[in-house]
Length: 115
Image 1 (cartoon, rainbow, N blue to C red):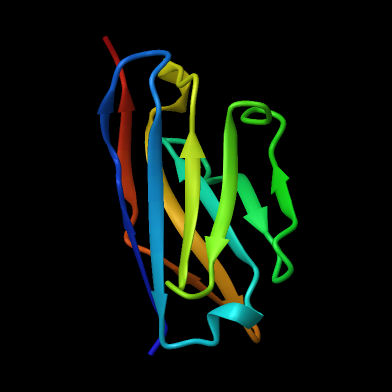
Image 2: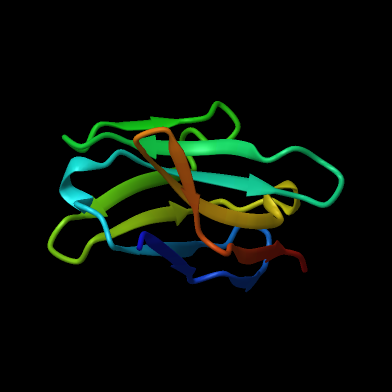
């Protein structure tokens, strides 16, 4: 079955950096677009970034210039490199893909930006 496992979250000071990873299994990773979302309690899940099969990245306005998304098909992994982190970036970050008409989500990884 499809599994997405995020890792790399943690506590970081404002201005710091983190790299999140999402390891995928149970699917043809090289044929899947992948996305990152984030969610804070009481708010809707927010799209952060996507990367196409060919590696073209798309980033939300709120993170453009600070975050980047990449993929490694040999490792079946998608990455979210986060820099210049702000307290407003604090959230649970989720990896997502779509197979057919079904959305698949990981369990999420907590990112906390605080001094």
